[in-house]
Amino acid sequence: MTEKEIDFNQRINGKIKEAKKQIDRNKYYKELIDNKISKIIKLPIVFAGKEPYITLINKEK
Image 1 (cartoon, helix red, strand yellow):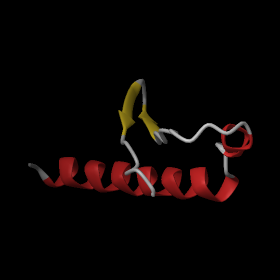
Image 2 (cartoon, rainbow, N blue to C red):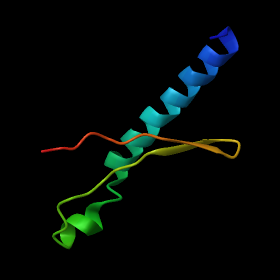
Image 3 (cartoon, one colour):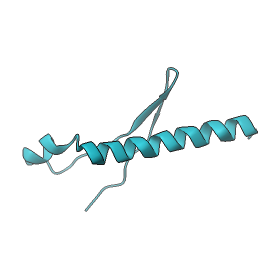
Image 4 (tube, rainbow, N blue to C red):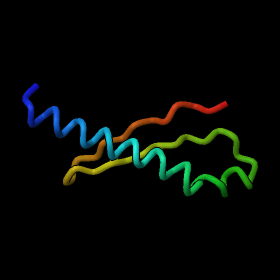
């Protein structure tokens, strides 16, 4: 990989980490929990232009 590609990947990974924190901090899934839904999938989505980058957050027990 070139230095430019490595920098791009680092920025995308940093934004994905921020998105994960935002999901938990703002508890976007609270309404699901309030309605007794237990199987919740959290997917942080980051866009670079029109290209989406999506990462599954590991299941919590």
